Amino acid sequence: MPLFDVYPLFDIEPVKAQGCYLWDSAGRQYLDLYGGHAVISIGHSHPHYVSQISQQLQRIGFYSNSVRIPGQQALAGKLGSLSGYPDYSLFLVNSGAEANENAFKIASFHTGRKKIISFGKSFHGRTSAAVAATDNPAIIAPVNQHDHVVFVPFNDTEAFEQVMDDSVAAVIIEGIQGVGGVRVPEVSFLRKIRELCSRHGALMILDEVQSGYGRSGRFFAHQEAGVQPDIISMAKGMGNGFPIGGILIHPSIPAKHGMLGTTFGGNHLACAAANAVLEVIEQEDLLANAAAMGELLIGALKGKRGIREVRGRGLMIGIELDRPCAPVRQALLQQYGIFTGSSSDKNTIRILPALNVGEKELNIFLDAFDNIIS
Image 1 (tube, rainbow, N blue to C red):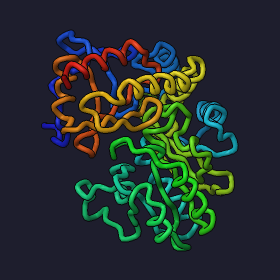
Image 2 (cartoon, rainbow, N blue to C red):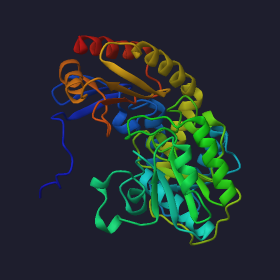
Image 3 (tube, rainbow, N blue to C red):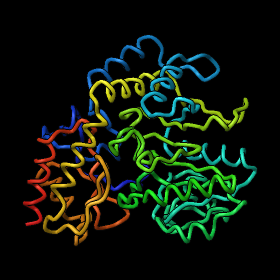
Image 4 (cartoon, one colour):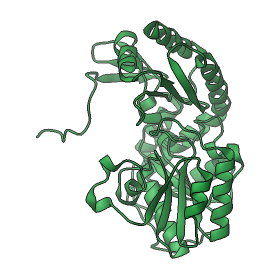
């Protein structure tokens, strides 16, 4: 049976990973500055992470949400403390798209409305409502098309004000746009969204699936603006590779039995992985490292030949070249063994390394980049 051919693949088979490095089946070493779409938050095969999952598997690997799972409450406590949202509630799922689907569902239940406002170049997932709120017609099937999603240009306050009214259930925005080319929402724009959502009784949903969990140097990227969303969605860096996602829900939004549900969300192994990630983030002060290493890399890149603009915060960085980036990425991978990411902007490279990346690894990249561009 063939695999359904939807992924263009590099002819590379990783067989081992440690920290910021991968090794393929031929024994070649690679520097990983992409982390499989920002998933690897604490480094590959971190010993504490491996230990916690292994110990959990020896006790119990899975049971459904019909029983008490102590790891869920432990995760909620750690997450509330580290994120600065201790009074919010946590609902656990398996992925970022699923997190956003449940965020939309809560918003619609809570407001009794169905209109969603999203923004240009947004990406919120590939499932039903999430993909309808994603600004990419190429991945929206006819069954996913909805007339209740309105797209507004990113960072355009005037255009947003013109469409915001009492029919809106929710406004969703990424803490930093990832697939869209690492575009940062202006502080004033986020504050205006918060203001108008409160005025019109709509919920503000912050999609922190890629930009959250310390990626920006803060726990959530939107915290730079000092706004408090009604719902925060998360996933990628949450489990360091183990599938887990979730939403944080404002205490003013009531829960009721049967409102949401999931079979695998918050299972024993997922919680062991997620708890280990938070423990490492705290113990190794990875938010501070992400901020420092991001500042170093952004500063080193600005003004370099061949670069039109450097965008982002912390270790979520977009490098917009003055040319298509595909040949540069290919050279980085084939000649220098460095993984980087692409985006919907054909000129923009994404850099999304583990939060414990060091200056040594960044200098390897900078030297390789200079050699390729020159």
